[in-house]
Image (cartoon, rainbow, N blue to C red; front, side, top):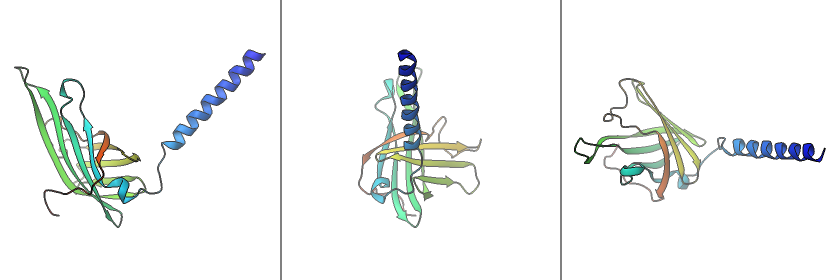
Length: 158
């Protein structure tokens, strides 16, 4: 009987912890400009650990953010030397709560930026065959860590 009671308490504790985790992963009503503004990086692993994707984000106000992406797809050439395919993107997205959405005018390229918690950004990408115009195998999807909280500067004016 004691063993059954212990198992029941253990199961309830695990269920409560899981419920807390699910609630913690939900959307927030808003994120501050200080949380949004900055430079985020996603480092590659293994022999490509010196390479990373970079995303700069600036809160513009009025439910808009500006973002610029410098993206890579690292690989090894036949002689073993590392090289990369590259892609870039610079535009504005609409933000509501902790999620910013971008869709190209032709609908071929979509991004979802989720500000998971301060310092962590998750990007998911949805593209058609025409895609976002990146190099071969270049993708923005992944979890990025904030490396700078300074307001970013952009190469081109919009």
